[in-house]
Each structure stands twice: as C-alpha cells, then as structure tokens.
Image (cartoon, rainbow over all chains, first blue to last red):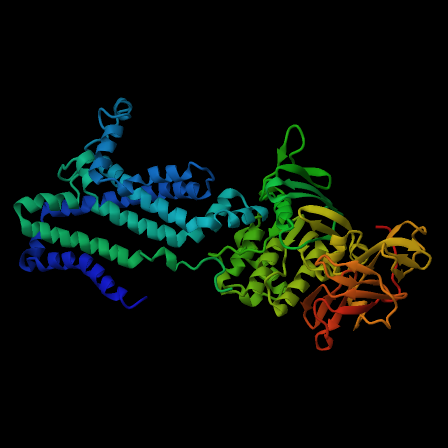
Length: 261
Length: 364
C-alpha cells in the first residue's frame, strides 16, 4: 500500500469508530444492570434474536439456491435479474416495508388470498421475519454467487463423470467448497436482520412483545429515556460485533482450488 | 468396451470421428487448440455437442443426428474424465476425493475409505491421504485425479493432456500410473507429444483443427504418416514425389534413395524422414559444387536447393528450432537435428543434407 493511503485508512476507521466510541462514552454505567434487565428490553432482545435467527435460516435455505442458480445461469437477462433480486441492498428499508405491505398486507397483492387461507401476515411476528429475510437475503445470494464464480460447474461436471448423482454432488462437493462463503453470508445476513428497522416498522408495526424488536425499542426509548436507549444500543452493537468478529472471514481469504501449484 | 464417437462442435471448429477397440488405448494427437479437450468433453458428456453420436459397444450414449435425439447424462455413462484443470474437490482430503469415486459406485462409506486407501497405496500416494488438494504439487494432484477416476471403475477412461504442465520428475511417475491405468480399461489420452503416443497407445488419431486427419496403429501412423500435418506432429519431414526404381524423385528432380518396391513406378509416393537421422554440413555456394537447381525463395532472394547427387540435398536454412540438446535445422525440403555445440549455420545459410539409408517409399 502506498504510504499516502495510510492517513485515509485511519480517517475511514475514525468515521466508523468515533460514533460507536461516543455511544459507549454516553453510557450511564450505574443504571446499566437495571436498564438492560427491564422487561421491555428483555422482550425486545429476545424477539430480535429469535426473529433474526429464523430469518437467517430462511436466507440460507432460499438464498443459497438463488445464488447457485444465478452463478450457473447463462442468459443475457442475468444482469437485470441479478440487479432486481439484489434490490433490497440499495432500497431504503422503509420503501422495502411499503413494498412488502403492497405484496402481503391485508389489501396487498397476495393479502386477500392469504386472508382467505386464514393467514394474516401484517403486524405479526411472522411479518418481522419476512421483513428481515427480505432485506438480508441479498447478502446470502451475493456470497454464494461470488464464491461459485467462474469455476461454477467444473467440479460438479467431474463428479458427474465419476457417476455421482446431483444431490450427492451438492452435499459432498459443492457445499463443502462453499462453506467459507456460506459462513460469511450467514453472518452478514444475521447482522443485517438484527439491525433491521425501517421495513419492520412499516410492514410489521411496533407491538410490544410481538413486533417490537431491539432497534424499534431503542428508537422509542430515545423519546422518553435516553439512557435506556444508549444502553440498548450498546447491547445491540456488542451482539452484532461479537458475531461478526467470531465468524466473519473476508471472502478473498479463501484459498482457491489447487492454489500453490 | 469399444467406443465410437463422431463429435461436432461448430463454435470450436470441431468435427472429429474416432473409434477405439475394447480394452485398447487411443492417443488423440494434436497441437494445442486443435480441439482435443472438446472431443473428450463431448464423449464424457460434460459438453453437449451440436451434432454427432457416441456409442459404447454399439449402444448409443448420445445420438444427436437421429430424428429423436438421445442424450445420456455424464453420471450414467461410466466414462471418467481427467482434465488439465484443477480436478480435485478443494474441500475434501485426498482420501475423501478418491472415496468419492468409490462411493459413487454405491460402496458404503467405511468400505469406500478402506478401498480408497488401497487405490492410493497402489499408486504410491498413500502418504498423501490426509492432505488437502491445495497442499499437493501439480503432478501429485494429477495422479490423485487419475486414481480417483480409476476408483470409480469407469468403462472408459479419458485423460486430457495428463503430462502437460508437470515437471519432468512428476511426469515419470505419472507415465507409470497412466500406463498401468490404460492397461486395464479402454482409454483415450490426448497429447501433443508423439513420444507419449508411442509409449502409451496402440492406436493414434491425429487431430488437425478439429478434424481427424489420420487414424491407425501408432507405429504405422507415426513412422509412415500420410499427411504433412501428421508428419509434423510425429516429428518427421514428409518428402513427396513419384516412385522410381530404388528411389523417390521429387517434382524438382531430386532423387532420394528409398525402397520403392511397394509402390508402382511413376505413381505418387512419399517418404517420411526423421530429422535425427539426417546429416548436415554447411556449404558455401561456390562453383566447385555440382550445379544445383535454382529457385526463387518466397522472400524474393535467389537460393539454390535440390539435386546434388543421390542422397545429398542442397538446401537453405529456413528456421532453427531448439529441442533440448539439439537444434532442428529446418530447410525448405528437409530438416536435420544438429547438436547445439556443432551448430555453425544461421537462417539463410546454405547447407547440405545427407538423407539416411533405409527409407521406404509408400503411397500418400
């Protein structure tokens, strides 16, 4: 790295770190135990962890096949389809929430049909999961697609010539090779789901214990008890940073097949 | 298993036909870019050709020429392919890679591991069992890939340039392994090296820009090539002319002493000359030399080539090709391999080639 880039790197780190440090500095340590164990706080934390965990599983189950399909699909429409599928990355979360309402809300595209089937999504915990899955899915899709990359299909084709079925090939060849990417995608998806605010508020509302996740609780507390908001914010940051620190490895650190030859 | 294949892939200019007897080994010989890999991939079914037919023991694996096209997916063909790329599954150990080939036959996990251990030991790779592919050298990885292919007990084994990009020592171990593998199963090996074809294959098919220009018994095709291209691949120079008693006479009137008893006098004939057997001396084009035919070189410079008495050819150096310890001095008609230390000519210099004894003229 050229020397002149060093100050820029430091500046970048400062931009990210300073607000976090400022938040921690604002903490009222004496009230911390009391604030963190308040029933509303515990409810919100529990709901956040549970919904984020379920959304992450959904992202893994659905985003992996989608990423795989995008990596192997040969079509001139692929860039357009990819851009649309990854739209939640660039969409303001509130817009995402509105879109979800128009699709699954009571008067939405599928809302009527869901209602008839006895399912009402909007303003339920399930809606929180849907909102989080919506915003977090692109991370899984991107991770899978980029990990498969240009090599997509070579090993699978060879596994075929050895006589292996497609499922055997998926479980024993493709998924083990994708493991680092899947971990990365899972961690990023979980962190994104945990921090989800806009889409959740728009699509699922803010009902205590049902749809009021930790980010919503922080936003509401800020109006009445700033100290409580800060305490919860630091908790959220701590959980997210811990998960990322433990599990996240940059994709580029993957050793490509047969490197070192 | 006898194999017949007709492969057409328009986008890569491939339109090749070949056939192999059960249990024998065919070398698909051609320079890089001649379409060898594409032919193998089509036989294995990893590439879908535009047209053609591949049949094992007469039963079609695919038939894209029939009115109702038939296509067998690679996993049901029993044809194992080893490519030039990174074939080993990167997340699996060497043992698990081989075991994958064994388990694909339906062997249970524990038995598959035992059997894979045996396969590796047989190939002298037992020490590598627990390594990951990224910790292997190129030659080791290639050997493991071949062992894995064998462990799947294919009906046909396809090896794409098994010795390419591997250092000399590793290539020796690989050749032993390939020779052993090819002894047990119908095998197609692609190579650009005539020596490998000689050592490993009973039959050879020469591929020129996607087309098989000659196929036959290896010794026959490589020592008596019928096309200029096959001769070049086999490392020989083809001299064409007409048969005369005890010689071949070129269009320029040059007499090359050769046994022409197999060809009627006056009909078209060729001799294949191995440059290693051709002698060469430098020549100053002076008046004491017998008068040589003079022709215009493409460059527009007057050069003299051709007749200078039986078995001696006056020529002009057109190119010098380094080949290990020797340099192939290529003239317009002939070529000779000269030891690097003895090389005293450059491009454009006049030389005298001495044709070896015992050449045989045959029909082109």
